[in-house]
Length: 216
Ligand code: SF4
Image (cartoon, rainbow, N blue to C red; front, top):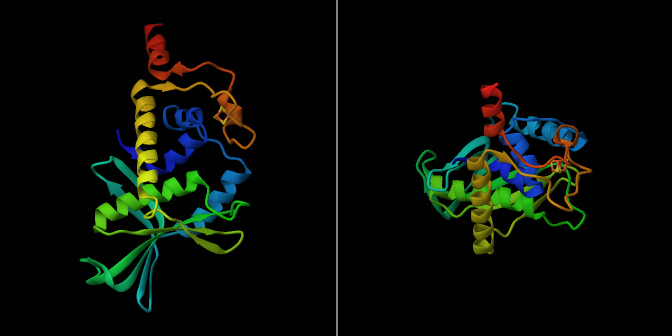
């Protein structure tokens, strides 16, 4: 089944949240979600294509990987002219490809958290597939105005193995049609879906609920 890159973070945060969002189409926003949305609205307010000396920046770039069944939208892709880069036919020259994801807050540790890194890694796999390149991933943090480089190429195998596992687990949920129960120890205080989640509920299957409805 095709996986939206954005939903990987939801799954990593809480499998039940992923199930509610994707299978139930539930949606609710809290302050953190609103902050992230405002930042992304700024970035995605119309597609931008900025040409500066030796660099082309595109915003809201659709990405896909047919073999991995992944798709998503990158906040920003930069094409930096480089003799050692790859030839990009549409741009008629050789470029290094950078992926830049925007996040509102930098973690206290200063380094990107794993959920953000895996999101950019999934974008990187798509970008590498589309442009036959070895792209580099960055996160730009709105609060500190800092751009942090991710070591995705250096730790490729680690991220690839993790991403494959996550996609396989997400597909299991999608195929089952069942919203997972709350995981023991799950932290719910920052979750925007708290009010609709009813985390004490056991897991239930959307398909069986529909069947029950239809049989009445
Ligand atoms: S309230 Fe807790 S269990 Fe429910 S979706 Fe949010 S994080 Fe998951």
